[in-house]
Image (cartoon, rainbow, N blue to C red):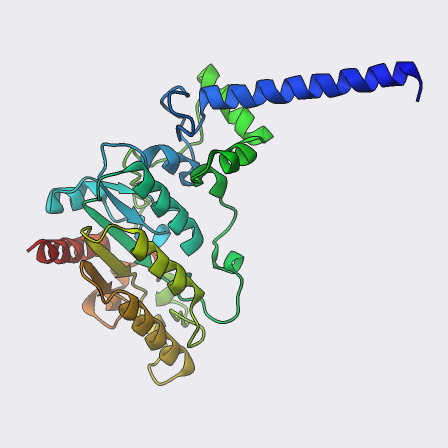
Length: 322
């Protein structure tokens, strides 16, 4: 190698190192998702973001002392209404399409950022929780998720944050450029019914079966759910909500799918057999699930159904406080 090429390579390496350090320092100084991985750094706010990143700021906000964990099946549970009924200050940390690994990461982050025991935790349970058999942890996820953003150690955060998309978000925040068109408020609530007219759900025109579980176990998601319960302070009331589906879609009890559903519910109740944990099972043949107006598509509830479920959550919460 000639002296000229050595100088070029050395200059390139130095420039790359300087640029990398400058970019990392800039990301840390701006803290585009308001996660405050380094105390005292950051602008103290963030742009409008999709829930996967926006929750980093919401979940550490001291204005909230209770949380709703889950995916789009609990998105319509209203933090403000639940707070008015229970006296707790709820934040919705629902992430559409998420599974139990993502939900555990969010719960762990929320608990770390709130040293005092939360007033309440509501966790939604659906097919992701009850996935069974010899599957990998990744198969329990709903899709890509920034686990690094919610990590407990700075090194993991730093490795995840050192990417072009994060740098671009940091630049946009520093320049005051608007974020994504997200409808959720500060408490994470997004009313996906807003501006829409109810239509007959798919269930009204197409028969199908939606089982809670596809085999009788073992349930890897339940193992993660147990770890989530173990992490919650013993004095915190926990409500596990098995989210509803349109009743005609549920499998007959005597079928393999029906027996698998029973097995998963039994596993859920087994890990919930402790003080301050209650299971609310809405995946049953009840008036709420027989009414097609309770659903948009057979599994995502309408606000009419959300109001009934919130009332049940509030009643369980009040009973646990006595």
